[in-house]
Length: 122
Image (tube, rainbow, N blue to C red; front, side, top):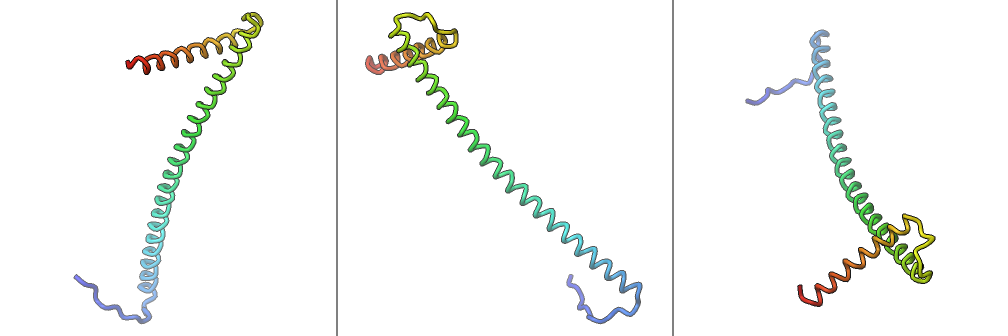
């Protein structure tokens, strides 16, 4: 079903002219609101995508930070072990330092066991 042709002429009846203007205005306002809603949805999608990227980047950096923290703790523990061997005593070390040396010793034992398994073919 097609629309009939429209005559472009002034509407003489003021009531009908105002009604026509009101309908066209309401239609344009409705279209503008739909367009704004579409833009808001697009903006939300874009922000969600950016949030996902930012979360991935932050998570990656947190993992790197954790690795660096572990590496630093390992190096500090190694230095404490060397210092204790030079002093030939564990006197003068606090509980935190002793725990750090213990974790270093555990780490080194695991590495030794892995290497032993590689060499013995297990």
